[in-house]
Each structure stands twice: as structure tokens, then as C-alpha cells.
Image 1 (cartoon, rainbow, N blue to C red):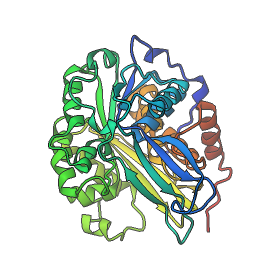
Image 2: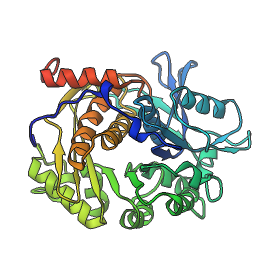
Image 3: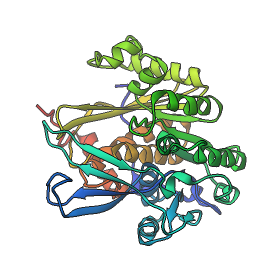
Image 4: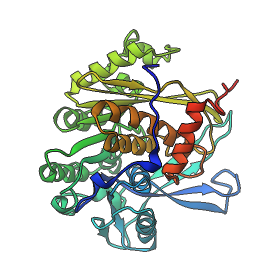
Amino acid sequence: MSGPAPTFNLPQDDLSTLEGHGPALVTFGEAMLRDTPADEQRPEATRLVHLSVAGSEYSIATLAARLGVPTAYITRLPDNPYGWMVRDLARANGVDTSAFAWADKAEPIGRYIFELGRSPRPDMGWYQRMYSAGSRLGRGMVDWGRVLRDSRILHTSGITFGLAAHSGYSHNPWLEALEEALQAKPAACALGLDFNYRATLWSEEECRRVLEPLLHQAVDCLITSVYDMARHFGIGCGRWSAADILANRPERLEDDDLRAFGAEVIRHFGLKQVAITLRAAENTLHHTWESAAMDAEGHFFRSPCPRPMIIADRLGGGDAWCGGFYYGLLTGGSPVDGLAKGVMVGDAAARLKQTLMFDLPMMNRSDLQTVLAADAAGVGHQTIR
């Protein structure tokens, strides 16, 4: 543990400083529909599915808006009932959808089939995102100057930029859209990126070719894992080399290990902040979660301890953490307090989300306050054996 755990009263947070003529947080990426068997059959055997909305940046925007942060989400959708469903649900949760780009009604919406696993059978997912309407949001489709005029954070993920390779496009439309956004955003608006590598979308070489220049040139805050940095860039973690990390050798990463990792990642890419999420899975039901964050000035905060979860649906857990982390950064006050609050609220959101079915983090500040209070009191956190 890196120090005494701070306490917060989220329902009493004053969010008036975030109010302006536009959203404080803007996220962009593909929204999808998810098909999950409703009868616990395997996907090929079921004839009854739950249809739900998903997407990393969509989920982050949903949580931030539900926590009271003025938030906009940007995507491209077919102008048909499935596209309207995505829009209407975002609006219902308080997300600004006015910058959506609309495609012809015949274009496909991104989808994935998901089979919920139980040990020893793992979770399984199948993407259907090739040539989707959402994969083709590009230059000239968004009025970035309008949507970003009051923004403090612009967020996207590595998943978004992998869609072009997945579809075999000769250029990367989302990367071109981001270049426009970077030209239009206020100087004080930070660019956040969740590395979020998906091998089902693109190769490691393709990923590095696109994301490495972006990390060096434009990203302010990187959210990642120790494993991804070892795998893609050969970065170790303190006492543990990249090879050790990839061989799953570390039993416990100490604070000094994570401090060394954070400092190296920040130095390597020239970042302002790095955040690290840490999950340990005993089986498909029993996981533990913790995280850490560090900035270029050396301020560091780590979760007071790993916390157990009993998993209902792990999808969206990392996205909920991102939404909670950004909430902490935006409401925490000083850089030190913002990091601590981001880690603590992010942890509570990630753990609570994974007790809920489907991707979206359907929670509010009172829900998170209940988790934080239970953590502080040591209630309900016996070690899972």
C-alpha cells in the first residue's frame, strides 16, 4: 500500500466547475450490439438471445454521464432502428449524442457474439465488425471545434484504431478523424488512450505501427497493463523484466516495481500520466482487482489492497474503471488528489460493474459511495479461498 486510503463523499461532490457550453469529457469509438444466449445454451444452439449495447468508449461515456460529468460520445451508426437504439440509450443516460455521424440505413452495425463461460470453460467472443458503419468514421464527419470547445479530456482506445486493419482498409479513417480533433481541441484538453490491444482486430506489428507514433506525439494519459507494455514495447516492471512478465512469473508487484514501471512508460513516450490496472483470476467467478496511477512529477497512488469480486460478467470492467478514473481526475482538485480519487473511484466502479450483467456500468455516485464506505470499513472483503 502506498499510504493511507483517502475518503470521499461522492454524492456531495460539486460538479459546477465542469459545466460550460460543451462537454468536459468527450469519448469516441465504435458502438456495437452484443448477442448473448438468454437460455445459457451455447451460441450455436440457442434460439433466444439478449440484445445489448456495448463498446469501450460508449461505456466510459455512459458512466461519466451517470456520475454527473457533462459528457459527449462520438461514433458513426446506420440510420436504422439499431442505430437509433444506441442513440436513445446514450441519451437516456445523459450522454450528448449531437455529434453522431449517420451512415446509410443499409450499412451494418458492429456486433459481437458472446458466450459466458464457467470454469473450466472460458468466456468466448466472436467479433462481427468488418466493414461496419462504425469502422468508417473519418475526416470531415464531425464538427470537432464545437464538441471540444469546453473539453478537458478527449478519450479513445486502441480498439478503435484496429478497426481499419480488421476491415483491410488502405487507410485508417479513425486516425484521420483524430488528427482533425487534435487540431481543434483546446490546449488544456488532455488526450487519454486506453491501450486495449485486441489480437482479433490486428497484429502486434500493425498495432505498434499506428499506436507508437500516437503515444509519442499526442497522448497525455495512457491507461494500460503491465503485460501489454511488456508484450509490445519490451518494458519491464521494476525487478521483473519484460520476459518475466510475459512468462507470468511475478507473484506480487510491489509499489517500487510499479513506480519504476510508471516512470519508464512516462519517460519512454513523453506522457503526463500513466494508469495501470491489475486483475488476478482464480477462476471464472473469483477475481481480485487493483490499480495504480503515476504522473510525470512522480506523484503515485496505488489501491490500498487487492479487492475480491464475484463475477457476473467481466466485460466492461476496464471501461468502468476508466470512467471512474476520469471522474476522479476531473473532480479531485490537485494532481495528487486527482490520482488518488481516480484510482479509488475507478476501482469501485470496475468491481461493481463486474457484478452486473452486460457491458454498461449502470450505477451512480451513491452506489459507488456504498462500495467505498464498505472498503473503508473492511466489510465483506474476506479473502476468497
